[in-house]
Image (tube, rainbow over all chains, first blue to last red; front, side, top):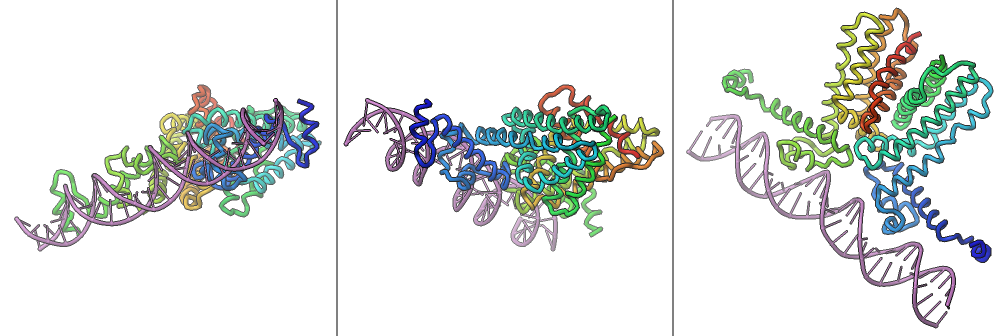
Length: 211
Length: 211
DNA sequence: GACTTTTCTTGACATTTGTCCAAACGTCCA
DNA sequence: TGGACGTTTGGACAAATGTCAAGAAAAGTC
């Protein structure tokens, strides 16, 4: 196997092992699908549209994925990995509770600005999972991951404040998610104050999450 | 016009003015559509399916509505009216802050038990409105109505507690909506504790909304 | 009872959709 | 070179969808 690599590594564009290439194609296809899904939503994004916005033809989807749902679930799982560590920086860098709250709020705002399509897709899929059982497993898994992510922030905030958390991880996540979702909706409909409001609300909420 | 009414009022089943009958049909059709939408979701509920679950044929939809979206928006607006006064009773009947919090929490739980399909449809449509601009006006209007509804509860809670609200109406709504949404999802996926958790979370949240 | 008007049914239409498939393409080893 | 294999293409297909229209049926009017 190593021999294969050394031999082909001489090529201008490095060739990969079959398994790797297969996986890379899946990733590229899924990433492209996510982009289209983020623009059109789950309901209106057809496989042809998804393929058209990629470098592949529409038939190739069924070579790499079982069906449409398989593609989407794979893509969403993939997206989760980029999400999960987004706030680790603010947790690591902040030295006071207030500083953490400020940085966290700023990062949430930045997330909406930079990745609004991705997040409206997430809310779309979570809603779909209330109807389509095939989506539930993936959605619940991601929801848990997001909950953990939020909890790392809240726990650190409490540490820095020298207090104990006053709410459960699930509650903290639900509350912050509620604020985030409203801010996203407001941002998408062009409400100017939406993002500033989110920052203020988060800074006001954080102290209420400690005992 | 008044003469017409008196003439027809003698019939066993009171006949209505044309405009009223037209409107009643629209209501019946929309109500039926809401039921089907609550079961299948926005994406998978076709006009034929909607009509099949009603007493009408699929063609009649375009006699009473311009198109699919017109039907859905009308239905959702109609649904709002049943929602908006749901918690007025607990506001009127409660005599202490704690009693209000308990009653409010219980009513939220009851709402999920009785009308889960309707509420997952609501979240579905709100998510869709992030993609489809034609839905936004109706969704934002309903969101505002729900916000007002929540605020009446919170304001009364503060009155009974003899304190001032510590958060804005928008914030209060976002926080409670976050809890409600998580509880609904948990309930739909069969998580037993989901509803009990919601009640506890709401009772714990309310005191944190006052100064 | 004959007419108009309103309401409803049925079937047709053009599109779009997910899925599948046969053939073409490219790469690699014998 | 030739054949085997993994990959990709583009077309075909049936099913489903929103929309519409022509005419039947019912209701209302004189």
